[in-house]
Length: 414
Image 1 (cartoon, rainbow, N blue to C red):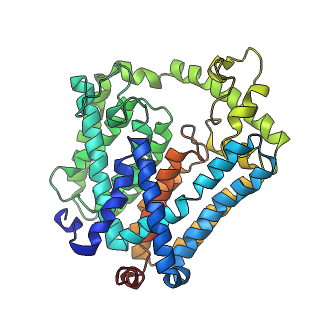
Image 2: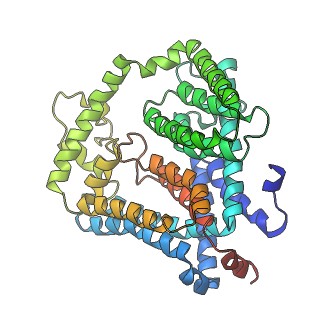
């Protein structure tokens, strides 16, 4: 199975698509990869504009992009920090040709399946690296363990758990369908869960929960294909392994205690309250993308523990309100929220008319995208560069599976 994921000739071009998630721990490099992809996308658009205009996949991509980007443009009219919002809005535009390029090189359902397998192996490697860092005190790249949270290849950033949880639905589904027959490959499931727990990202737990529910839903279709006794044994062993990690990592799991949770909620509740007040004053088209930090100091209550919310050094607030729905509402207003809803309406309308077999293959990407774009997510900024890279990469992998083979063949023959 894994040998078949490497196809000679023109299909080698899809390796650049894998480079996007592979360079996420080094965010600047991932940004450069997306920039190079954007240039490639513009070249493809010029050379193959007829095929692009007649492709339902590219039309869907354009509509999805406009649902997010047009509200950003409209929000510029009342932006509180025009220069920053304008720069963010214009640079966001490169995700359109970049996504076009990525799903073009991935090409088809087979290419999409291959990239999902290699992503799963990459996530497994990151998880192994995280456990090694926990046990040895340093990871495979020599990054140290800070004794509180495992960072893995993302050192010094505490982003590992969020990224692993974001891709978890796709990861679990790929193990169930594509590499389930490779001996003890099922051990990759508790491996990822343990790495997320050790990473200590509280905001990753709801994402992981949704991924596990989705995996359980898929398992009911697997029960008829494998021994129920064998499946029960695997699940039991998985729980034992996770429990063993939890028992030996008390300091790490303290971050999930009620006391720690309550302490972390105080500043966030204040940010949400402030976001609501900002939204009430700018409810239609918001204050401009990435403008939250500039107006937050004027809305923070005195004595509300704002030391963590507003920097004494810069006088600026947190970069975003740590709630995706609040961020969209504050920075692009009701228009942005409407665009977000239309985004999902367009996507659902697109996938609902696909064949059952193709839809089944696409569901891991759709659920992954839903987990990433969950309105109640409280971690990364929705309009931020890092999270946007992940979002549009998943969209590229998803749409690639629906691109007719004749479309990409015509592009490579030129």
